[in-house]
Amino acid sequence: ALPLRFVSRPAVVGDVVCVGARDAQNDAFLVGYAMSNGRRLWRTKVAAAHWMGSSRGRNEIPDGSPIAARDGIAYHCNNLGTVAAVDAADGSLIWVTRYESDDSVLCRLKTIGGQEATVTAPPNAPLMADGTLFVLPTDSRYLYALDAATGTVKWRHDRNSGEAACLYLLAAGASRVYLSGSAVACLDAKDGALVWRSVLLNSFPVGRGLVA
Image (cartoon, rainbow, N blue to C red; front, side):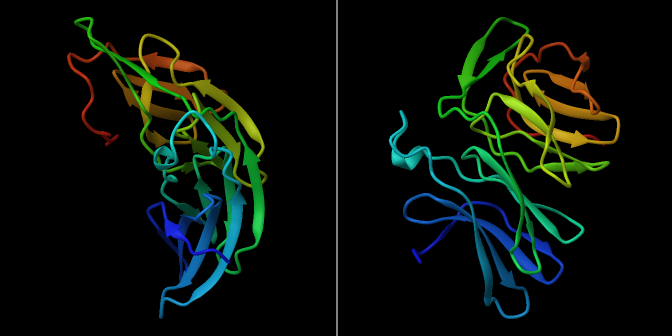
């Protein structure tokens, strides 16, 4: 097997440390290590690197998003076109879902004063609420709501819709999902419909923010 490099923030699931990784061919894996001694327990391939030969260079292939975990399952968006759910105990693949991937996604930012900019999307950790996994990949223009048990896409929302793009997935609950960029947006968690959007900021965002 080819050596791996880590590309995501890890998560502890039970007594297993789960982390996203890539090999020299940029295929994507989830890898599990024993928390007690660091021994590798399993490695599970979750995506092949379709970015190779794309319009971006090899060094511009995005890192994976941080791992999310719930009830012994690790969830990972590798930002290479798939989201995967893996049993952390033994590395068995529960499901993999492909989404609409684009290696040239740019987010449009605006300010209330009329300034404009385009930026690449930052990695966002998947969020879980009421049996739904919310994922905002760096290589897609959409926020996805997936059935956490099966990976089935429930709905998607265009991150570039409206006046300005959504860079960050802030919080999710049973009824609402919150995103931010040049403005804060609130979506209905059941169908992705826009509930409200704030006015544009006076300047470009410089951090993720939080919902308190």
